Image 1 (tube, helix red, strand yellow):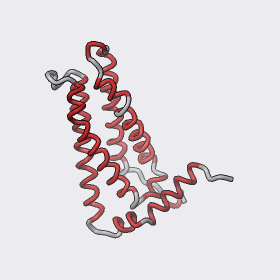
Image 2 (tube, one colour):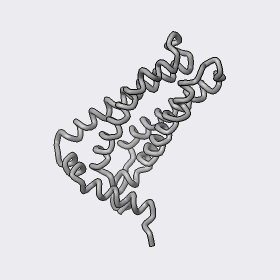
Image 3 (spheres, helix red, strand yellow):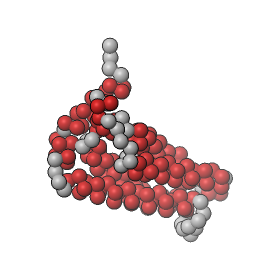
Image 4 (cartoon, one colour):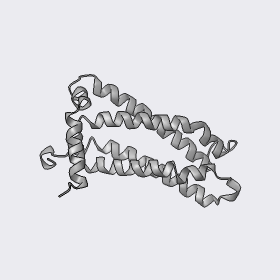
Length: 172
């Protein structure tokens, strides 16, 4: 009988907990806060860029700059912030991976993160790069609001992690 996805994920979480990263960060007094600083700084940069792009799509700011030009200018920063956030997030996750496995806030955050990244770099990117004369305002607004909602959900679910407790024994 082949293992289920849930079993594979739990095994991965156990591996993360026992990994060099998990032990090293968990056993250090200063390493967890140091990694978390990078995670939060990347979150701030990413959040600011997402807000900037969507304010342009909504027509509330930066009217003199086409959305496609703005996208081209901020895309490298957006990708860089996302990579730093993902790398630092993995390091933070590795310190309590089994605990996070059973945490509904973490599960929601990961789902919203996957949807936000997928949406941002597919549909939303197309809307940002489209000729505004050929794109109905409703499409721009819907794309902007959905993008803002997804990324806000990632942040709010991440914030909820500190308030949702999971019994490690209930996951093993």
